[in-house]
Amino acid sequence: VSSDLVIENIGALLTMHGDGLGLVQGAVVVIEGGVVTFAGPAAEAPPAPAGAAVLNAQGNAALPGLIDCHTHLVFAGSRAEEFRLRSKGASYAEIMQAGGGIVSTMSAVRRASLDDLVALGLPRVRASLERGVTTLEVKSGYGLALEHELKSLRAARRLGEESAVEVVATFLGAHAVPPEHERATYVDLVVEEMLPAVVTEGLAVACDIFVEGGAFTVDDGRRVLGRAKELGLQVRVHAEQLSRSGGAQLAAELGCLSAGHLEHASPEDIAALAKAGVVAEVLATAQVFLGMHQRIPGRQLVDAGVPVAVGTDFNPGSANSTNLHLAAGLAVTMCGLSVDEALLGITKNAARALGRDDIGTLVIGKRGDVCVLDTPLPWELVYDWSENHVATVVAAGEIVLQADANRHFR
Ligand code: NIG
Ligand code: FE
Image (tube, rainbow, N blue to C red; front, side):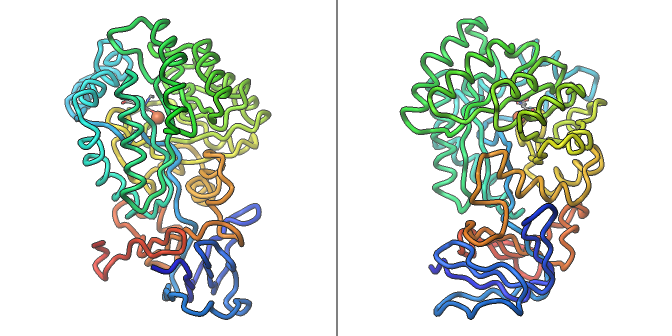
């Protein structure tokens, strides 16, 4: 397999270079050894490297391989019953306090083997890949005990090894307090046993915590993320999702890479995130899946100068969809992002949320991850909520997926 590839005849290329989308009409992308060596107007393209594969985009659009910067896709079991209860008036918080919610998924994950988790995860990863996703963040957080958190992270690692998608793993041991512990003793476990074990095995590059009434406090966050930083992990927060709980200010205080959700973030919280350079993850699917009235202040975040990423938050309880295109569409209609901002949110700014400089744009020196569409209009990706307009997915210069004329992948 060659990682030298020329993508020619691109009608509209979004390089994401500069302030906006970096649109180039009539473009060519050259990838050598898996790395972009040219991305620009066809007239300026260098001669194709000898022996390079050639992909003809047939006048259609292309953009960087998409990045889903926030998922919980290693899980077992179903929460369909809980969705039904919520449809009859029970709230997400009530279900969580009654021992349902995250803890019910925990039971299913504890029963599952590593192989089970991989088998359940692979079709989900594949669905993301078919949507053009070449990098996928995956959190643990449904094991809630050392052995089961490690198992979940090992499953995440295998999902990356056994698919064409790059998996970026985040340890979210502090997702919920498992029933066998008090909060304080569980936080001790996370800090003293789980974090060092995760780091020793190199199973995660980041640590996350759910700061929320019924989950963890700001002080827990200081302890868990403080220790994670000492151990060399990147840090992020689930902040202000169900109530204003202090997660955003904590993210600013600790210089977190990102803060997700933010439905209840105040103007002061937004200003603090902007000042600290924290990336906001707009997870509109969760807001809509939970039927929340509070809207994620996407517009206010952008206007305040916060870099805004868009993710799916894919998980069985609050966002049961791997569809990153839909997440981007909802970020537009529900959170006030422009279509351009939503496209930046699933590429360049998603890379920033992961602390990555090598992906998310198509500029010389970046990894050759490209998503080629079946339409000349890149906006179709955000606008079409039924058809998938991804035609070809390129990861590090290799064609890893190609749709047939019926938009089917084999
Ligand atoms: O990001 N908010 C906390 N965690 C998840 C939901 C997890 C679940 O309900 O299983 C989220 O929305
Ligand atoms: Fe989440």
